[in-house]
Length: 564
Image 1: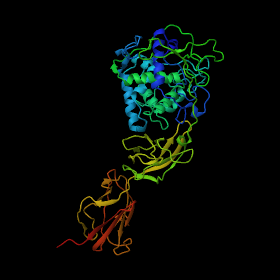
Image 2: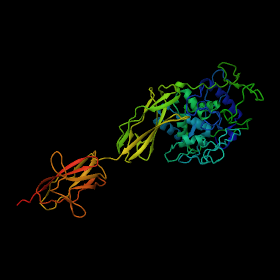
Image 3: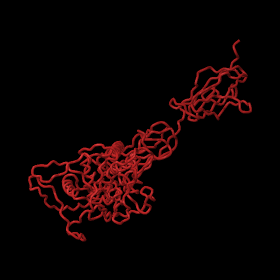
Image 4: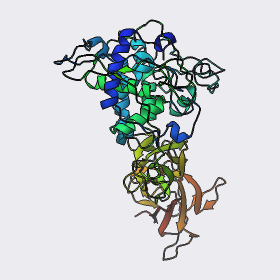
């Protein structure tokens, strides 16, 4: 929606004629019936009766212009159809880049959805006229907010304020916001940071396009399947005319488009006053005007029948044909409805800093019948005060379940920050189901302690050892900072004990001690031992060094009189 709402809810004579032909053709070939069942965000699935409760836009107004037709005149045809213009096929550079980036991002996090960027372009066209012709700054943010009307129940849905006016500046009622026209309560759930600036801004086309992509891909939708694509669009705005309009632009953009400079895109046409305004109320009806069916109570007049395209070889006059009523929404299929998720055999999640977790998280989804559910989207999210990440450096990833209902998260890598964190698996959006897995990153523990240089350590009886003993504690060859070491002068044999003669250390008072327990390695894992002294006993003695993790080193100390 744009700020000029009067323009969005009316059509001129030319647009109406084109729209009638396009809609008739669309209903015959492009837009299969769209059951409102099973997918996230679908009103039928949520049980909602209030418009806006289950639509990304709150079922707020949208531009109803249809794309120009690119149909050559055939023999027997009598209407001069407009030719597709290069201007209409152009999409502003930043807007087009945001759509394509969103498709690329979703392809890496939810490949099973198969989101086409042309669908985002179609929705962006009817929601904001491609963000008002591409009037965005270098970061993709609109120069001024794009706000819909207050959803106060007066001609639109009734949605009381949910954001304190933070997004829409209205602390009484919600309004749809930004290039993709999210209402604040939906943005709070689905908002994304598409341009990597650390913010989730509904007025930024990169953020809004990525959020729209995630919303359309919710549940187990495969947008390459026509019925799933229809469900996704209807979840965005619960109106079949909205679906037909988006479908028209979707097919138009699939036939070809091109980039134009920002700010030069074609805006929806300004038209003369129409005879109605969108209701935005009732059971999720479209906010743009549609004539009531013939004979309906309160219609006031019998509407004119919609024209249909002439048959090849006919007289060229369109024959009247009433618009078929929408098909009733079928009951959700239990075999395709998410019923539960469970741990599929994930073991304890523990790893040492800098290493990969040996265990991988595995989840199984079941339907309401209790059997495995395939193609259910499961989002794995890391939370907590560590720098653990999935492979590729991601903290969130969405994957579909396989035919047996299971999905395995990517390899989890521990960072350098130790501590505990959680990995949450979430499936479903209307009634989300979650599993939480506790995980921990432990500090490196030395597996080896060794001398930094091999030099004989000798002293004369009653003298001081001339050379200092230096050792290094490592884990897989990497020095372990702060490793605690215990040094003990020991006896030989199978059951060594503290020796009561031979070399010794000195305490702070100068007394002889043969065990030290307060030794710590430096930041590189290196430890220089205090000076060692010899008593009057000659011979070969043993010094044992033990780390807190159990790594051990035994060093020989020789006490002998100097050679004559």
